[in-house]
Image (cartoon, rainbow, N blue to C red; front, side):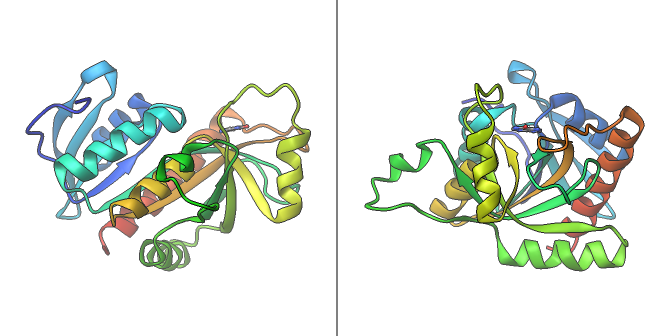
Length: 232
Ligand code: HPA
């Protein structure tokens, strides 16, 4: 087990990659917070947002890490809705740093799906219900979002980005390192999932987010996710 046994975890969980981001969200947006996990420094909190019980657990980086926590949340703690809130690298000129992408689906260059022994390639898709509610919330809060496909890569430091960029011809908007595993594991265990991602950099234009914009974008993404969870 990588999550403290007998932890009190809500049906809906927000998953940032970074443990300190989990702490920041819990301390600044939730009331009545309880720390339920600190194994390996992967901080997890349960608290309330507008009377709705919500948990926040970091995922760490990459498919291997996120999948351990997602598997345990679903199978050992009965979690029903998981919303990843992370960052991504844009591979489209018109999707610029600081903007938010909601991942309708996620391709992957990993062989993660091989564990299911399929005779083809699965579509890793998000929950329509959470996606629809996120879209509605984005309209209410006047937050601009891009909705589309992303690519979950196995590696951050690439020898050659030309391969990643080929995916943009297929309409893929951005790269992350977790979403496809989140979606496939949630599909396997009948759980709802969505990734909401803030664009930290653009691999085509080389533009990067500034630190003040990073904060603003992070807060927008957290508000979008929390105000969506209360409708689930
Ligand atoms: N690749 C993968 N994940 C990322 C990136 C990237 O370039 N930027 C932010 N998250």
